Amino acid sequence: MFATLASFSSLFTSTLVMLLGVGLFNVYMGLKLSADGVSEVWIGALLSAYYFGLVIGGRVGHLMIVRVGHVRAFAAAAAACSVMVLTQTLIDHMTVWLLLRAVAGAAMAVQLIMIESWLNEQIENQNRGRVFSFYLVMSGLGTAIGQMAIMMYPTLDLRPLTLVAICHVVGLIPIVWTVRLHPAPQLPAPIDFGFFFKVAPAALITLFLSGNISAAFYALAPVYVVGLEFSTNEVALFMSTAVGAGLLAQWPIGWLSDRVGRERLIQINGIVLAVITVILWGWLTVPYWLLLAVAAISGVVQFTLYPLAGSYANDLVSSQRRVSLSAVLVISYAVGACLGPLICGYIMRAAGVNMFYVFMTGCSLLLVLNTVISGKLNARASRQPSG
Image 1 (cartoon, rainbow, N blue to C red):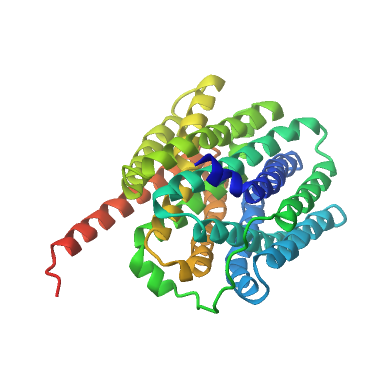
Image 2 (image 1 turned 180 degrees about the vertical axis):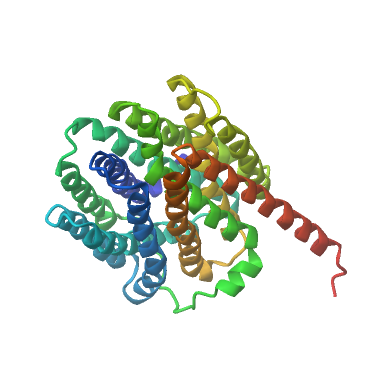
């Protein structure tokens, strides 16, 4: 297993550096816009624009990889991300920022599709959970380091955006220099949503709900914690605790999913998240230690949904469909991520910051319902006579 992980070191290193920039950007924007008096709706809209770009990028990334290959597509996308972030340091206008974030999201989708399709094409089903979990460890570690990096900028000026752009450029280097065997040239297979939804409906719906949860967390969790009158450093520690706990859980959850079953673990995650988030609905005075404890537990379950659903879907398709499936998975996640911050931002604006965790509970209950219905449908199908 160690040799397998080491052979993908270039992909893991690029993921680490790339997500460091993303983590820093997300927490910076939440704090910066809150400090400037920007409403929760605008903050949610900014991240929704990013995820709307992911939806567009899912289609664009599929076409780019088919046309020019994995590495060239990644290089072009990394350059676009860097340019979009640097442009934000020159133009301070929310409407323009929405457009820039959408383009950056499309470019990020290309990078994610490239890495995930490369990984899934070259690993076997019996190792998929562990290898993919290590990829998510690198992703979570980069995000956590990026969130903690905000402590270097107490004045919340534009310097963090420069560091974000640097991370996107540096993340390109390991991919360009890798000696790892590149994936085979891809046939121009269409993105067939109907086929993938028929094969793995529970996985796609899980990714949609995971997008709602994760995007709302990154966009509005800093606003929630600030609303409880905690400091910038306490916000950074809260965010990093959640992401760090999710990071530490990736490997054991991946190991379990290779043995217990990925769909069952998705259901357990949904139940735990629904129960733990009720504590923060606003009917209790929450000490900071309890806030961190809830952040850690919720981080474990919410940040392992994506690899569980992604691995589950990849178990069910052939290697020829890996790039198409990766695009569909990113799009499913991104559609949810577009909606999550907007819906959550509106209800927080209407009813207060405590509605953040009411929204989280609602998404968790839908996640449990999805797995229950899927399980019943699978059981019914298995009882049908086979022709």
